[in-house]
Image (cartoon, rainbow, N blue to C red; front, side, top):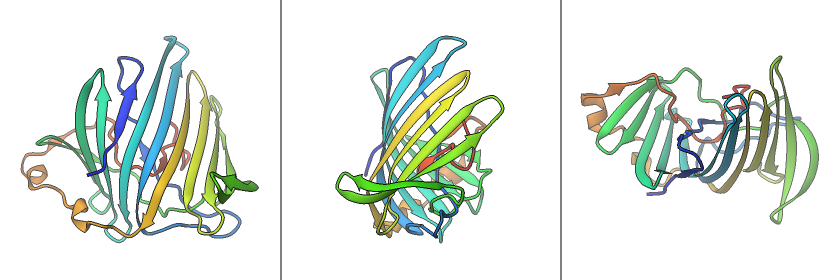
Length: 227
């Protein structure tokens, strides 16, 4: 079982919801409908009102199957030296997210659609370069909002559009930055049973409206949603 590691610099544990990019660039550029991969995310937030800052170091392994309309995260959360193992299954057909901690299962509604893994259609190509020895294309996505400024850059391999890196910066009363590096992205699912919802989730589920981790892929702010 792969893991997700989250470390925070302050007393507050920030769970970053991650989503998947959609649409296309100047030419259609998509990766796989079934895929698995490793994600490393450095995330930081600063609240100028309370003068509070926190950083997180996040590592995760994600499984995506567009045929089943499901996404699974396997993760571990470390906060204040406490280790918690968490598995999150997003079922986009049923519009339910199952967050599993030990033998407890929490259900939350999924309000967004599961979109294709592609470079967004409004992305602007800013250059081709080498990313860790891989020929890559970097795109910029401008965001416009009356109260905040957000910019995002995404990098994919030139040959097969595999996601490599994302950099995102938001300036607001609560500002944030995020860097995401994706590694070992492979086509197909090694163990399809990873998408099975445990029986105890259907027996005595706990329903919650609390922010949950429903999918890991590219960042939440992609699709113009900013935390």
